[in-house]
Image (cartoon, rainbow, N blue to C red; front, side, top):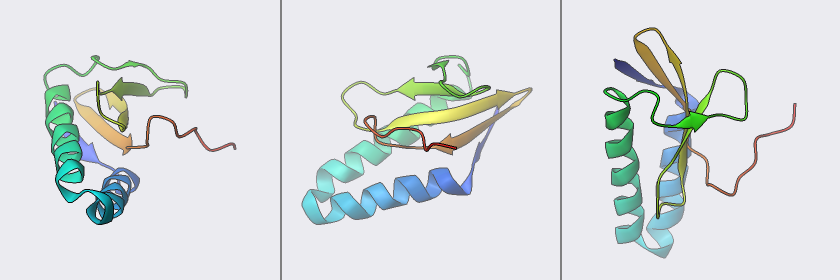
Length: 93
């Protein structure tokens, strides 16, 4: 399957990296690398995340990582929508 990063997901990851670069750059880089590796696994295992709280989404919780991957699967495309902190809540509509 093909993976498409939505702008918001890229921004989320970049903001996290900026935040961590001040506090602990090595840990921040490790967290981001781990997210990127897990997203690549989705190409072979698109349903590895649990059903998401929002319709037509899935949530991939990464053990020992503060971030999670919110994504959508449709036919042969996986869209990475958001990369929020695991404690972050969905915005109210």
